[in-house]
Image 1: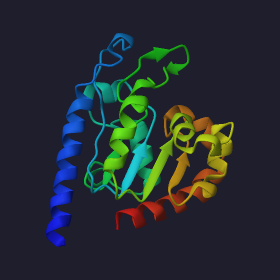
Image 2 (image 1 turned 90 degrees about the vertical axis):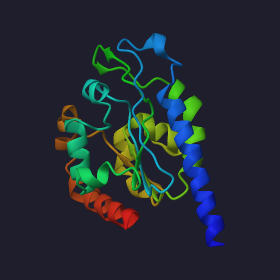
Image 3 (image 1 turned 180 degrees about the vertical axis):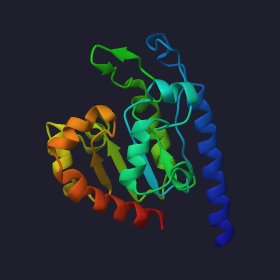
Length: 205
């Protein structure tokens, strides 16, 4: 029985690694990406926590390291974990809605390209069987994963975060640009963050 489990785990790891190679070579929407494609994601079948954000920004596009910016620093603070744990793909999977930097719009980065979730998510997610908690960072992730259960606005969805537990925890984007939202919604850091940190610790233990 133990040997069967070990064989199955090895097969799943091999399948995921092949799929990740395909994702990283993806050129589905290359013509729409002003800086060219550079898919950024991390995953392992053993991961117990999944982070689904929006799409890489310019710094992440340059480094190829997910959440390698001030947003990532704040997200790790919210989660109560250090970079060593955050970037351990054996524990934490990072699969954004859009894998490549979409470019700049009039009021910030453009939305994530829809091709990623449409083509890749349903192939990737079943290969993460041990995920205990999925963090939905931003409205794009919340609308996709929660469907009709998502509220009309991000604020409403995040305000009702307890409704989506234990599978999902909706979060605002930790970007410095969201400082005004955090100031207007002090309950988030006072009430939701302690629960988030407890859930993260439980998921990774």
